[in-house]
Amino acid sequence: MRLDKYLAQATGYSRKDVKRMLHSEEVSVNGEIERNAARHVSDEDEVVLDGYQIDTPRDRFIMLNKPEGYVCSHDEGSHPSVLGLVDIPRPENLTIAGRLDVDTTGLVLMSDDGQWCHRITSPRHKLGKVYEATLADPIDESYIKAFEKGIQLNGEKGLTKPAELEILDSHLARVVLFEGRYHQVKRMFAALGNRVDELHRLSIGPIELDEMLNPGEWRELSDEEVASILNG
Ligand code: URA
Image 1: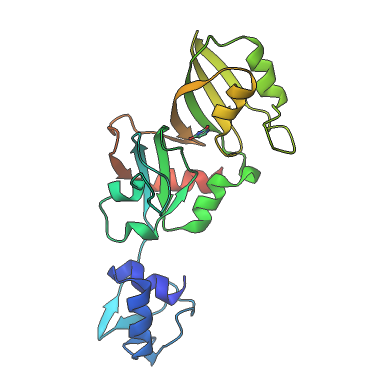
Image 2: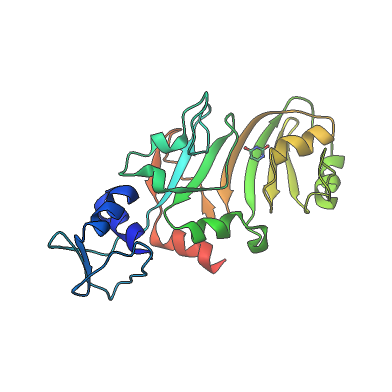
């Protein structure tokens, strides 16, 4: 991990503060003053700031039950960011793995570990994202084949990748996607002449939304949940 990230994560100081400390020679690595923010440090290195040894920081891995009305973005426009719901130091350091629309609810995963987040969003790893969609009009049996074959979305080059659709009720469906295009579920149903009224994400790959979490609540992932993404 880069030295500036290591220090910021372990101490709660901003990267800007950390850079200033490096510049004013307050940091040493293995007994030598270090000024290079990009220097790689690992568990074996002894990092000392202002005379205090700094323990290796742990990346944080979080699941949130996203309520309606929040954006999955670091920038707040007319709606607040989901990061404001996570009351930990420096939530802005978290990467959000797979965004949900402002009116979509359910499972959002976040971490300091950008590569872990990338495994979730990259279609190469084929992690299924499961949604429950409530439709304005009755769901036709023919949708199942259409989702399987792929659907041509407005303004996009290729068909959507094969997706799964299970009809749970006349207006309720469970959808499994293996990619993440902009407003994908809503646009797939729109292409079939229907409209999504409510959308809720239940799981991402092997990680399911914890039923104990009310909308707006979050918890840290277990070590097993974190590893399940890397093993998938
Ligand atoms: N598909 C959508 O249309 N919206 C979401 O928030 C997620 C998937």
